[in-house]
Image 1: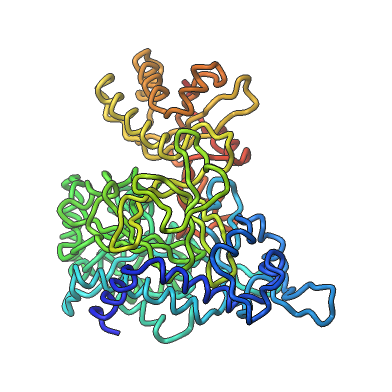
Image 2: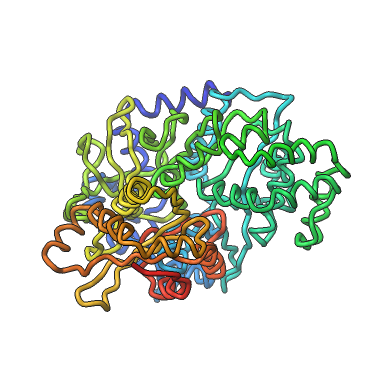
Length: 583
């Protein structure tokens, strides 16, 4: 299908959202009517003559979360396709389609262990997601038509290590699935990348990132675009670039990577890309770095790059200004709203900054419901959802999905704001991840806004341009009353900075931080239900340790997002061990 035809199909699908939604739900229920989960709530679902409408479905099947599927998923992972006591009963647990593998969810960063999302070989789901993924690619090509002479992408992607369940099923990140596939179309993905397959399929993220940079610099004149799944991935790559540019230049000059890169296949593949000693290229790049001007550095190093693509909404918004600094005049283009469970919405206006990014919902990707969310209460309003006909512009909702791959009225855990309509399809603004419990006293949005204000107050009050590299929070329920703890990692935290942190002005800045923490926090603080805020400065590299810990516990490196709200005491303990000073 041509790009014009894809975009036209996308456009047409948004014109009658309600009809497409009804057809999508009917298709899912007709296909999956025999699965165990549905028949628990719809005893007559197996009757092919019975048509189940949306109202009956929503009335009979309860809202669900991951815990409602955990037993079934564990049975599937262990290889138990059916566990009925009746010998003649061979109903499938979640889907009638064959199980291919499991995807890790990207939401395990605040708790420890990622969730397992079953991936069933569903022709219907493939058809539903095809228009989303191919349409997304068509949007990019519309804004940036291919150039045969400059056709490489510097992509910071990591296929991650694959684990295997007891039942023999592979487990990986959803983004890794096409990279591990042996089909020729998927293998062609590697042809346009500046890094060889052996780098992408490596198992050491630090070494892979270094090799991505090395191969990208070697192909500096051929790089058309820079891709990274999440903005934090490019920020980390830039920190590696800042700290290791001399070694990178030496490697290009010599024609082989430094001895630290000791994985034989990865090393050999990079040597092939380097193509022998490149002293002229090395000198040219070295002169750029020696100026120590990091503003617009991406365009200086890759002069033909036309755009940089990554997700910069939600918790990634905090990195946007830093990316703009590195990018200079090169436009940052946004990603789409795709979850491990299903595609949700597509970004048709990719050049908009995070504050103005709007996602157009895809009516054929899944059946969608909206659970009203009250930001003042930091919680959903009841258990009654509305469909597209009931959403109101300006209101916030938690997204609920029924998918072709075994999730029914499943709460995604994403809070969105409906900001308008594209034809009849809702336009969404991603707000934040939903709170896990009603006990949470700050939201991700509260914390990010407060930290942004904190850095501004630091500059104005203390005359110090302290760059906060990363931050997170946790509630200490052992304190009486409970206390919010905020942990920050700052750039160049030397002894001089530690002395500065003891000054009374810094304490005033901390008070300004606390005053910016949102209505829920303020109300409880004024009532005396919360102790004064605790702010701890961490050793450099503390959040890198969290990344390593998450990877060790199964989180894919390509999907890791530094947690803004930590709920696992073990993760808090790791941070506490790296505290330099607490105010």
